[in-house]
Image 1: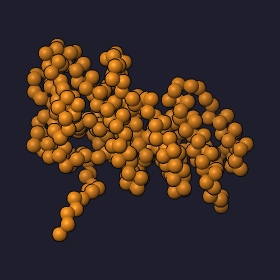
Image 2: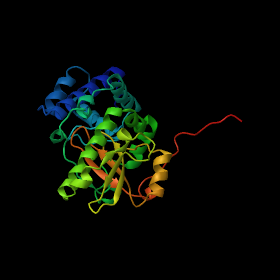
Image 3: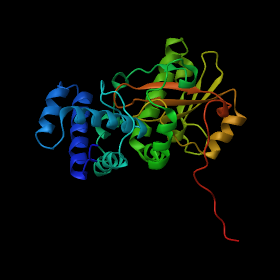
Image 4: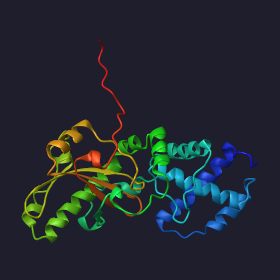
Amino acid sequence: MAEDWTESEIDAVVADYFGMLGDELAGRPFVKLARYRSLAERIPRNIKSIERKHQNISAIMIGFGQPWVTGLKPAKHYQNALADGVLRWLDQRPDWLEPRVQADEGSHVREIPSLWIGPPPTHQNEPPLIDPTIMAAIGKKYDVAERDARNRRLGKAGKELVLHHERQSLLQAGRNDLADKVRWTAVQDGDGYGFDIASFEPDGRERLIEVKTTNGWERTPFHISQNEIAIAETRRDEWHLVRVWNFARQPKAFSLRPPLSAHIDLTPTSFLAALR
């Protein structure tokens, strides 16, 4: 039976994985086998074992709501210490994806990528990359949704992308008058409305959009407030939740309509405590 990897070996393979991922996101070519051979010269593990560990890391990255290296098929059954090693790397470099999610206040519209909003994963026939129950367990243990919620630059960039999409869609429909009226309510009017963007359908009906953004895959969990849930119920005909995912690589999105219980499982994560 193979011995468990030591912390130093885990740190080495995790760093190697992030090195490959950084190259891929930046468009720099690399050869996986050459990376495996180089790492095998530095730690007492063979190439096959290293490749398997990289596949384990892909599964962990999906669970953490992070992008993962293309071609490294996610593999489960990994040491908890490996997940801890990935988390350790991320915690030491909280801004590692920041240059790719920063929304420049002075950016021109043409610099914002286009966005196609498709059906939610529950309405698709494609099987998930890995068992959703395993990913949910990782997300709960390491509070992936809270990490995304704290990343204000990521959230801001996602909202900017959807804002641009809404305006462009109305312009393409010949509704320049409505495109000029689309509002980023969270910025222009303040928080507390239960949605981020006030937009319109081409026929003039309101579209109230709450945006949730992640660098991870489409099933990455997210936080939603009681106020947002309440507005979704009272404004069912107008309210939309747009989930932007894969933001660091090529942003994609899907839309959820009320009732939310038809699409998502809601788990209480905090309680209001008052002294007796």
